Image 1 (cartoon, rainbow, N blue to C red):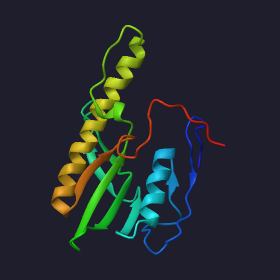
Image 2 (tube, one colour):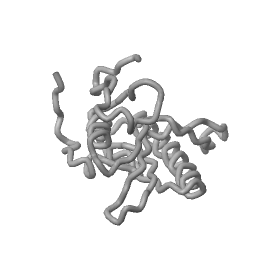
Image 3 (cartoon, rainbow, N blue to C red):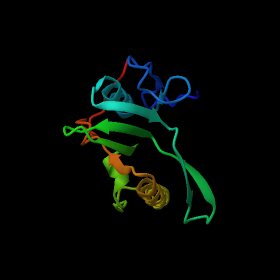
Image 4 (cartoon, one colour):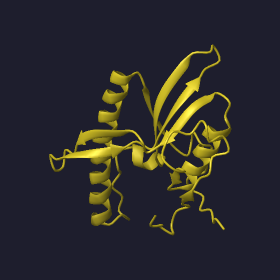
Length: 158
């Protein structure tokens, strides 16, 4: 696994490995994913969970080509009434879930990159919503707000 030193990355070892669905141990690509993995692993209402093992084809509107979208996570969750619910979950910074805003301090190159990523992510999410509806899942995008993390705070991990 190639690491990006700007993010907390590694291999997660589940405590409740019988709940984890996937080959080997899951790889977290950010501290936010690690927090989610820990929550899914110890939450008694999570019956099963997995990471990057649901692949959904989508058409990139910028190129017109079909690509594969590896959804961050899925969970099978038992609610308070005992009903089983299935969710596809994407973990993203809240900034990336909204249309990019042009400011006088951003370079043109940055603005173009943010716009391209937003268009591409929106296409992925639309494909995921359609797939989820067909297969009996719900699609959620979770941000630092739902994970109770201050997205503006820079945190050093040791």
